[in-house]
Every structure is written in C-alpha cells, then in structure tokens.
Image (cartoon, rainbow, N blue to C red; front, side):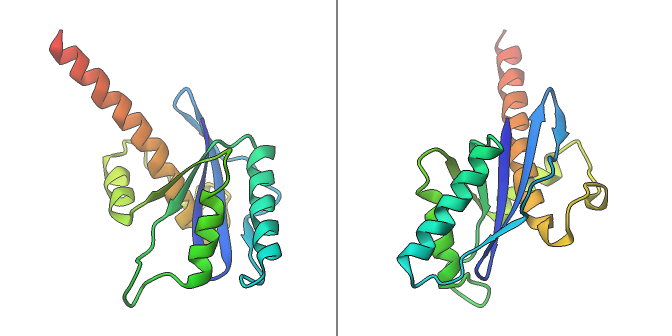
Length: 156
C-alpha cells in the first residue's frame, strides 16, 4: 500500500509519501515536498493546484491520502486558504482521502511497535507532521488487521 500524508500550513500542502509492503516501510524520493496554492481567490489557480496534486499522486501510484486534521475554530484554527486546499484534495475522484484527528495520530503512534527516529528518514524537517500522519495511518491498518485476527483466534 502506498499512502501520502499531508499537513496544510498557510497556502502549502506539505506531503510525505510512504509505502508499506510485507511490514517494510519505504519512503521514496519525490520531486516535490510541498505544493502551493498561490492565489486562492482565483478558480483557475485552485484547479491548477488540484491537477498538480492529482498528477503527483498518479505518478507515484498513491491511492490513499491522509490529511492532518486542524481545528475549525479557536486560537489554533486553520485559515480559509487551508480549508480550500483541503477541499480541493478531497474532491479528487481517484483518491481515497481521510482527515485524521491529532488524537487518532497520537493514539496510533503510542500503539505502534515500531519506533522510527525522524532524523533517519532523510526527509526535510518541515515534513515531520506529514510523515507522522501517514505513518499513524499505516500503523492503524496494521493494528486493525492484528485486532481482527486476534478476535477470530479467540472465537475458535
């Protein structure tokens, strides 16, 4: 499975693509680490952003995208451009897009049996949140499989 974690900051979608096969993680080198939406008021610019994001996901054969959730209101809420970016990504038909809450990410990272030092990933520092988002998602897939197999074993 190949998935992409996204953290939205200001007018940038910061990405990190991770694949997992046979319980081995791989972080491919990507041609870009973030995609920007320069003028959110221009519909043509939003379409360009959406096309660029969709093309990047197609080129790297990504089918699942996880966006780190942000507060809707309050001191730490996301800005309006960020929500436009989020909507543009969610409306790409070829992708299965989920928004992951910070509490979900923390819970999955604490349940994970794998401890990855971010400095060893080779990613840029600003990609850390995107990485933890996609890593938590991939670990949750592993944990849900583990839980399902444990339940079927107990029923036998």
